[in-house]
Image 1 (tube, rainbow, N blue to C red):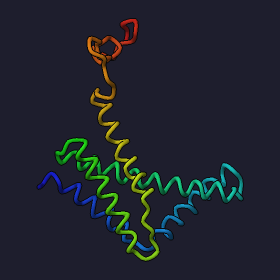
Image 2 (image 1 turned 120 degrees about the vertical axis):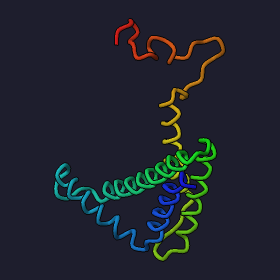
Image 3 (image 1 turned 120 degrees about the horizontal axis):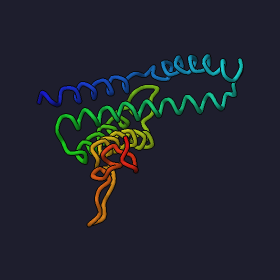
Length: 158
């Protein structure tokens, strides 16, 4: 059970963040900071549509990061990557359902997809970092067993 402590703790953090009915105001503060930074690049009055798009992108990126972290913590607790991904997506669905009952919050199936994308990104990164990010036809030598895969250039030099 000790291995699950970090994952369960992160689930609690996600739950508490989702339970915050003032979330929009807090992200509004972040957006004001973005506006100040953008003013340095785009002048004192950037296009409101652009700012709204940036705000949306930052919020979705935050979803991806928080559920990517959750996937990693669940994976570290022991389950296979498939089971860790499934548990992460199930918790994302629970999180969005929970938001339907919080004042000033709206749960969205699209956000479950964004959360799943964050978990999938970490899962693919994990697979790639372990050398399993590609398939090999029977009889062919995997790239990691060739000179290039061994960190040597195509001509044998590093």
